[in-house]
Structure formats: C-alpha cells, structure tokens
Amino acid sequence: MSDGRLPKLSEIPAFTEYITQGWDAPARTPDLVTGVAEAAAGHRARLAAALPGTTVVVAAGRAPVRSNDTDYDFRVDSDFYWLTGCAAAQAVAVVRDGDATLYLPPPARPGDPGFFSDAVYGELWVGPSPSLEEWSAALGIEVRPLPAFPGPPPGALLAGPGWEEPSEELGRTLAELRMIKDEWEIAQLREAVDRTVEGFAAVLAEVPAAVAGGGERWLQGTFDRYARTYGNGPGYASIVGAGPHAPTLHWVRCDGPVRPGELLLLDMGVEVRSHYTADVTRTFPVSGSFSPAQRQVHDLVERAHRAGMAQVAPGRAFTDFHHAAMEVIAHGLHDWGLLPVSVDEALSADGQHHRRYLVCGIGHHLGLDVHDCARSRPEAYHGARMAPGMVLTVEPGLYFHAHDRTVPPELRGIGVRIEDDLLVTPDGAEVLSAALPLDATGLEHWAKEQA
Ligand SMILES: [Mn+2]
Image (cartoon, rainbow, N blue to C red):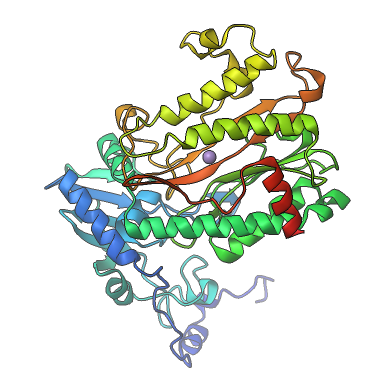
C-alpha cells in the first residue's frame, strides 16, 4: 500500500478465498442449562392461558455501549429468557398460544461474509456459534434467521428492550406469571443461593487482606470473581460497606478501607447460568466479635427479621412480614429512647418515625431479576396473598448514620441488615439461605470457620 494504509482483508479476493479453506468443524452445540427448554415451554403454555389468541413479540436486547466501540457484557432480557430459554443477543421471539418462532442472528462461519471481519458475529472473533438448526433442536422451537424477521404483526403485544411502544398489559402479565416459580426455577434459585453462601465464605476468608490494605473493593472483587466463576456474575452490584458505609443502603462504590472494630455489611448474590439470582445480606464484625453497641443493634434487627420470616406462609398477606418486622423495630427504638412519639403513633400511617433509620423496603420477590416481578399490579404484589412457589426476600435493617444527630454517639455509624431468601411452600416457608447463621454469636463462629 503505497499510501501508507493497511490492507483491508475483506477486499482481497485471494485472502478471502484462502481463509475460507482448511477448517475442521468445532463443537457448536448450544450450551443450554439442563431443563431450560422444557421450563420455557411450560412458561409459554402459562402465557397462552393468560393471553389466548394473542401474538406476543419479545426481544432479547443487546449489549449496552460502554464507551466508543466497547460494550458492557450482554445480559438477556428476563422475560425473553423465561419464554425461550435462549440467551442470544439481538434475538426476537414471536409467541402465540404456546408456539414460538425464534429469530436469531445467523452464525458467521468459514465462507460466510463476516467469518473473519465481523467482530460481533464472526467465529474468529467470538468463538464457535451454533447453527439455527442446532438452536432449534436444543430449544424445541422453530428458529429462523434474524434478517427474515418481518417485524411485529399488527396488534401484537411487545415486550423486552428496544420497542417504541412496549405493551404495559404484556409486561404486567409476564411479571405476575413469573411470581410463581416452577420446580425447575426453584432448583435454579436453590443453586443461586448455595453459590452465594459459598461466595460469602470466600469473602470472609479475605477480610485480613482487606484490612491489610485491600479495603472494601478487595472484598467486592472477591465475591464478584466467585460469582463469575460459578455463575454468570453478581446478580446486582455487590454491596460491601465497612464502618460508616454500612448504613448507606446501596453502597456499591466500595472504595473505602476495612478497619478493625468496624462492622462489615455484605449484600451480595450470585446469578447462576440460568440467570436466576440470590440476594443475601449479613453483617459481620471485622475483628471477629461484635462490640456491645453493635451486638445491641444486631440483636434488634435479628428479632425483627425472625418476626418477619415467621409471617411468610401461603394465605398470608404479602405485607404481613413487613408489619411484623416494623413492630419489633419500632418497639426497640422506643425502648432506646430514639422515637420522638409513642410506638402506636410511629406505627400509624401518619407517623412512621422509626423509618428514619430504615427508609427502604424490607422484602421483594426474587427470581430472574433481583427485584423480580416489579411490573405487577399493586394488588397482585403488595396487595396479594402469598402462595406456594413464591420466592421472596425478607431484609430488615437499622441504619444509623455517623452524622445523624438524633442517634446517641455510641450507635452512630452502625448499619446492620439481615436478608434471607425464602420459598413459600404449601404449609409454610423454607429459608433457602439458612446455611448462614442469623444471630451475632453464630455469625462470629461462622466467620472464624472461614478464616
Ligand atoms: Mn434484597
């Protein structure tokens, strides 16, 4: 090239001919989680029963741009995955009465135009890609090339990212259907919780390194590496809050030190390969034992947590656990002289003074999304009764900021949250995260075992 430019390979016929030749076929079978195709078929059947005769078009989404020509990791749309079991970027599914047609970007293999030149689909860039036939066989649904997607038919309801007018009715319907987990989903959530508990153990073993200089970021990195190794990654930004950061509800900056004598709040969840996530919180003493003030706060949160969890059972109002936990919190704060009004006044709809130290919600549905089923109607979520197959978190806490003048000095800078993941069973509830202790002494012992 006499003008100094580099040669463009796709414009050189001899090269494009040469690179097409001489390849064996690599392994290209879709790497699906066992059982996902059957589970997705069951989900489509439930959607068909909820919206008979309705054509639904769902998009998988695409990786968001990080900067310039680099993207964040792709994470499939939860509704799309729930209905198809496929996690391919830019895919679109047309679903009607239980049947589905999936439109997938075709692979770019030797001989295909993008094989060596397409950084998004070319096999030399992204690795071996299953054929549309292989996808179809694995998923048990018809698969066509994405360029053949004719667009949504008139009147179709749209879900997933990228549409100008997604259907509220469909979003709501899917959210409410996803509220009841089937056996396969419950197994996925069990695995997510089990991996998360192991991730907590991995983090506890690194506390000395965090104190020695790694700080909160080292612990966050430890959990995220664990989650990435044994699942897709963390199901949400891991919260690692030491000392005065523990009361900050979503402390995801995690750029502070970890000091002896402080509390360490860890709110973390592994998203497993099937995209279901756990959401678990424990608060540990950095030095191995709680101070009297730290223990006092932890004990109250523990009592609230147990009172809340005791309300999780089929037939109960979804908000029962909230009220039970708040009653314990309000009484405790009143006993400590922290309420400016009576307990009854604080607990009344016009009071809520105790919520100064606990402004967040204390539980939510859990599933493919950490805050699952959020597009449900209020009467189907907080206004509903619990039913077998629901999976939810219970997570009361107390958050005394270091600069809160209403808090006695010895409690300032203490933040405690206890969060478990519960499955509503036919006759009560199962705490999926029960492998982690609840009480201060149990946590001290458990942390020592991981060191
Ligand atoms: Mn949570």
